[in-house]
Amino acid sequence: MEQISLIEAFGEFKDSKAVDKEELLRILTDTFLYVLAKKYDGANNFEITINPATNDVEIWRVRTIVKDDEVEDPNTQIAYSEAIKIEPDFDLGEQVMELYPISNFNRREIQYILQILRAKISEIEKNNIYQKYKDKVGEIVTGEVKQISKKELLISDDEDFELILPVTELIPKDNYKKGDTIRAVVEKIEFKGNTPFIILSRTSPKFLEKLLEQEIPEIYDGLIIIRKVVRQPGEKAKVAVESFSERIDPVGACVGMKGSRIHPIVRELRNENIDLINYSSNLSVLVTRALAPAKISDVIILEDKKKIEVYLKPDQISLAIGKGGINIKLASKLVGYEIEIFRDVDATEYEDDVFLDEFADEIDEWIIDVLKGIGCETAKSVLAIPRDELIEKTDLEEETIDEIIRILKSEFE
Image (cartoon, rainbow, N blue to C red; front, side, top):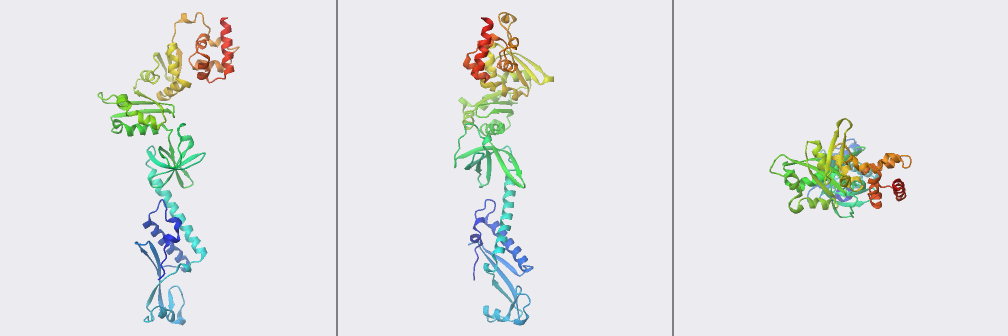
């Protein structure tokens, strides 16, 4: 008997990520019966047997013995003279079961079989990956970097499914190479046609939220609630946490003894500075905490404009704004209001000073707005800041800063 090892004959399906061997053999069996039925207008006289020990598939055909001149259908009937060559004791009317050789399929039929197999296995792979990840959006997964391109990293999970991590979703200081283990959050499932693509992210606020949940038992158990997370990936994050138990300090619990709980998260996020804030439903209190370490003099909430005016002493303004404006930017996102900074000073402070608006004929209005954005309302408040610090805070060209300084100084000269 000739055995047909279809697992070997169709080796490209042997290592399918979605289909185990048992299911693959079933698919192969159904596919061959389907092709045989098209070839012979029916396949009721064919049987497919599988040897589980060797994974061999054998195709058997059953035909009825008829007189040599009465063969009308060679697929279901066999001439008596041919039958007795197989077994001399055969009689008319009996059935002969014989192995159906693979060579009976022509090249076109083999290609058709392969097309059906590819389509079926592709459909199963798509369904399996969707079923696995449809309820995992927002959860952290761990995988291995399989391929790196300019636009994305291909990540292989524990079942060898391919996940996509766009380069735009990497933390700026991330530097992965092929074979590295990587953690990320499932950001979304995108469909192109009917094919699902699992998109990962390391910059999403949800990634930090889930890392906190993994590292801090009180969050996992629901004793501490994360109210909101905002991030500038790789640089700074603010996390508002709350506990409903007076016995639990939510910020202290998240930090841990000597930072033991927060440090692993900081390392995972490439030394991202994480500000943990004790949440308050009182917006003024929340704003004050969000702008720490700056000390706030006064807070005015403009509900209709979704703005908050914050007044600080001059020496606190740079602390509230932060390097490159990151502190005030994240604080605004955290509270959900636009925060505007104002200098809290006595009127006598302005007796020998000049407001920046009075220089509108010499300095462009948008530049004046930039200077106000870093907490400067007057000429002296600008001149009090070192040149290099002004350049860094405003992100203006050196020539522009030099011209501003010249104009402001000339006022007092």
